[in-house]
Image (cartoon, rainbow, N blue to C red; front, top):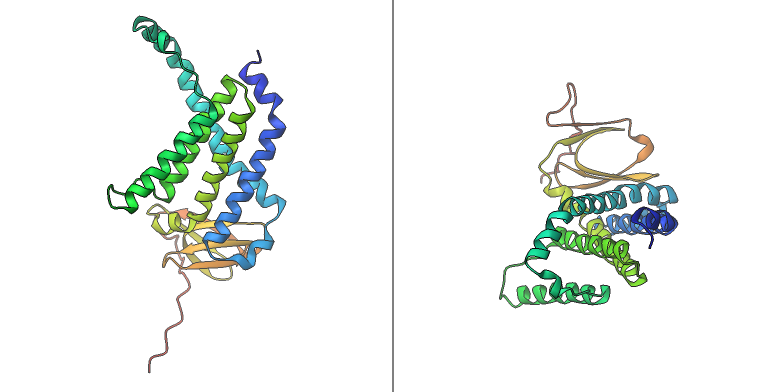
Length: 242
């Protein structure tokens, strides 16, 4: 029986490939969500790799954090299970059954909301988080019981979650209340969010307008709660009044 570390080493090439796929799907979702389809052909292998490091890196880190907590709580949980005789109820749920239950639960909640029976439980960000948690559970199941169906379904849920996050990136940026990004390029822009690619960057400014600028024109980005000294954003041209 391979240990978790040996499994991770054995499947490292597959994990890297999956990271590139997730990064690419996230990038495509951002471009589609921002309505900038004309710039889709600018996506490069470098963009895929950079996005994979951000999206999949966080995902893998979350898995290890959950797994570490599981290792710490396992001795206590096993003693409690033995005392309460939970060992009599050992059930090994298949990955397909778990995935089917998650999808049916998601569809049932969505239909209940559409019929006005319940409040909306799954918005864009909630759906992505829900799918990422499912992917993490399936990935942990794979490391516990190496089965190809667990790996395939975990990858599928991770891709869905990445696509959802990409499509809702503009919405997340527009709703952001945190520090602003002060961009110095040909002009000066106060941004709520920036998604930089190798050739261009999609910017959501303080007026919730989507602006596309060339990445090579960005000289400096300052993250701050207050405008830097001497920073004056470019003013919009006044409208002609008749």
